Image 1 (cartoon, rainbow, N blue to C red):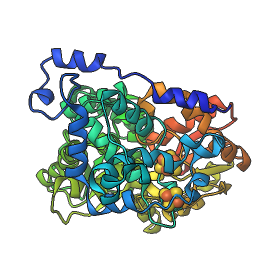
Image 2: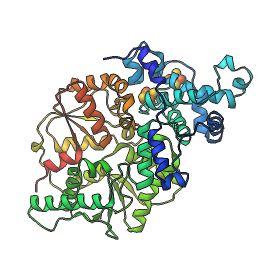
Image 3: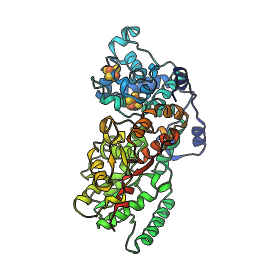
Image 4: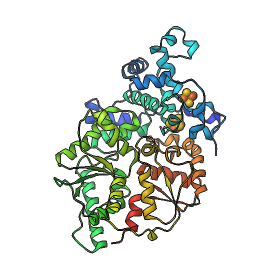
Length: 470
Ligand code: SF4
Ligand code: SF4
């Protein structure tokens, strides 16, 4: 399935939907009252505001990506959108970045201000232009950074996309899904609006299951215990749709003799601010985690399987929140590796005999430096691990990155661009694909369903748990 130029053009004219925004305004939300969650107003001069924010927020690295592109076209062959739409120039990374670049040049670059036609500089004229830009930056890029890694000039197109997304979020010119998830995370501290009651009930349910399974009431899923060696943070998807992964982690912690706890608030390590470009949301969510660890006097923060959660909490959150702390922060993948190396848990790989391949999550390999550890683990817990090609930093996105799973209107284009991922998966001949990211579980499941592949998605905790010798 491919989308032709005509169809991808129509994506640029998808309308701005604001029903959720209107409803939120009526609900008297704290996040709106405090000015954290922004809504769209047709009465404002949004074009002028956009231009002013571009000027105000351009950092040195953004400016270098605005000015560095020489239009060599090399990045076109690295993007899954342009590779699946070879006749459509609007799918190339350079085209997408140029839609932001031209505004920057018109207002901040000497040549662009003097002779705009020479350098294709152009202002944003009205809300229609902004809506078109919204569809490009949210709908035609998964911010996978594959083009960034392949640009000889060091242009970071994914960073430009996030930069533009952040300004549009400030103006409320966003897809409905982006608004809805941002609202939930601002209002409740987690992306899926899980209440504390549901959170605690799910943990109690998993604890009972584990006690039955292991035949002991000594196994617990502790909450808010002070002075533990490890504070564990999870993805709300685990509470809402996949509590098995919380149970798997608890079982492994128990067998390893770990002193651990979950916090009752600040347990969501995911961060929609990374996707929407809203640094304020990013700072607030990351701070929830850091403050929870401080309050509980934990010695280490451990992040469950999540690409963007790891990137946000481990690498970006400190900068967004201007937060200083020395506390070590790691992925559960590091923790599992340490347990096996230190013989804290015993593993029998013959319990995972199906051929398994591994999907590198963009936020972990290209932005998180978590590359060899999952491979080492797979070698320990499975008998038939096989790489997919290309892999590591060259791997292709599951196509669900950067919050695209919440933007249903762009799904047909996303599925067309997933042809590359589907071919990659199929070529391995594997029966299972392991990913260490909950977001990628959903992205890969969409690809598998759409292209009718005979594959099951599994996660590392599941594999380690099933290989345990208890
Ligand atoms: S590879 Fe870099 S310099 Fe070349 S077109 Fe792409 S962004 Fe521009
Ligand atoms: S970041 Fe990824 S999806 Fe976006 S333009 Fe670059 S290669 Fe394409």
